[in-house]
Image 1: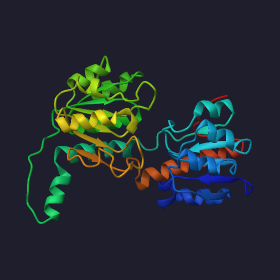
Image 2 (image 1 turned 90 degrees about the vertical axis):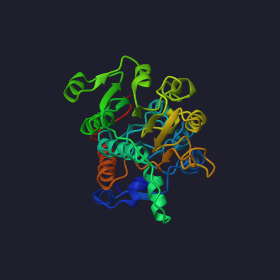
Image 3 (image 1 turned 45 degrees about the horizontal axis):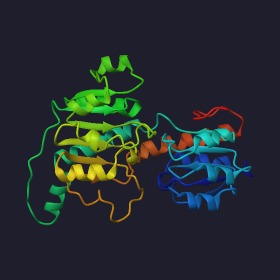
Image 4 (image 1 turned 60 degrees about the vertical axis):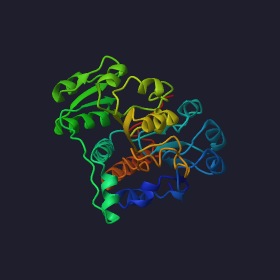
Length: 321
């Protein structure tokens, strides 16, 4: 495969040691690395020079795909979120989009509880206080017996529910595709609607894909249906939460805290309104960035690519022709 030229943009792939590097080297590709996620403008500059992409959250729009033809043969997504790839256009032009489901659910679920515990125990305030030589203390809250509403009970949502039960919480879930056996085994109540989650949950954890239906799902209208002081957790996509509305709700206290690993702009501008609020914690899209998860995702992305180019079925493909 020495004639195959591949663009690799994912920084966690590049920065994390592991077997995936040996797998990629063994494939014999001509490899070009960029530090993503890349905007459409940079992708357009690179388009047409590569046979394959190993991409993260780069903007692979219709224009990028069109300019990449006829050379581009395949897109191998590192991860599971496909909202930054125009899958419809890729399908139209018969470009397979490969992805890596089932590789990061444990890690993202753990990160969800990192955000929740940090908010409920005022972790950043206490760390900053003691590092500054102080000994200021705030009284926090237990997770025990609280209701956590999980919107999206896929692989990640299920892992959140399992951990919620370990903390003695009461999980309630909403998903269009309900796994009755899992819910019965782990004591997850099924919500009849998203509004039921909004009405009863002390904590709301988002684990749904970004679609036209879920974009701005958390907004002024939906926040008004929630318990005063609710904590919202977002390890899905930033665009699911309307930024201006969550800022206003955090400032008023209607939302007690917002813990998010994702934003509507990544990386954010220095004046992004969520970065300075004391009841908001933002991490830089690292929910799946552990040594274990990175190696699983990266190995799967490389294996998908090498199998496809060898004429073998990939592990997972998002589109069919």
